[in-house]
Length: 345
Image (cartoon, rainbow, N blue to C red; front, side, top):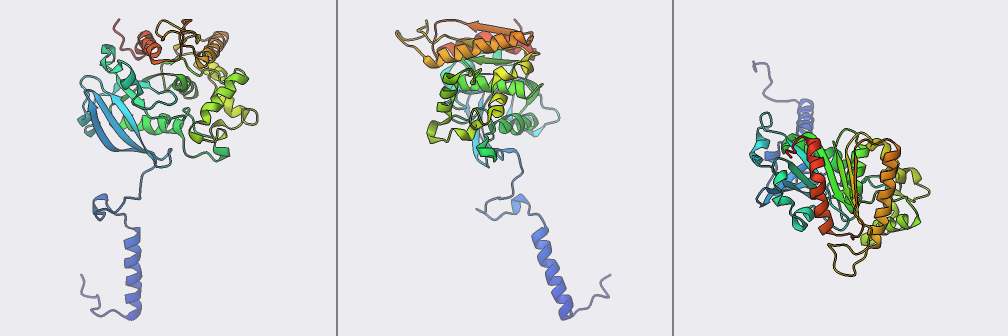
């Protein structure tokens, strides 16, 4: 079949073949295994991908996740795995089980290790049939895609959690489509926001000492702006100015989203900021007092819009601390696990 191919190429034919050879070399994709040693793989798929896995304790696995929504940065996600879960399941996606999932967020100044380091969550027997997802959310990320003066972009924590990470965990790590979400303080606001802003994603939500109505009054606005300014950040990057960008603020204020929480179980708890039974003598918290007023307002608004399944525990004396949040997690677990269909009590 090659009998008619000339053995000596004309100068024009040679130049044409040279150009074709160069084009093929440029346009043909390189297999990952063909990269030279030490050469960075600069071609990345959009979304999130796991770049490292670390077993940190019994039933505790840390994923290092590189995220497009976070500008290509890598952040950690801790999984508290159920009995019977194995990392090998991800290699057999067709037959691996998908577990009901509890998302436990974290508060301001904390991180993805907060719940396992500060509470007994890893020893809680009722969570042995549930995959617990504890994602990094930034020191003061506020569970939002930051406004950044209208430019958007990094950080986009909401997109990372509700789209990228959600799809990654459900595709490769055994997370099922039955989900609930809970947390404290900044994360309490996040738990309420995610449930309200993504209808159907979570079957129930719980907020402990949560920032439930940051637009309540000037004190509340000034307080959250102070958090936004943490670590020398420009506070206007998050949601903009509370007057000029009022619609963005309202879109991230659970009080103004109460109508979207009507159909799912909601748990709200908070102390009043005075010295409580789990506090050192003389301890008070203006932050908890502010959040108590915010939660009271949200509870009243939920009642006004006809929310059907609201549980409140406004327990009076108590400050902004882990002893209360651990207690409130246990108090709310029957509701949360009941929504997942895993509560045997």
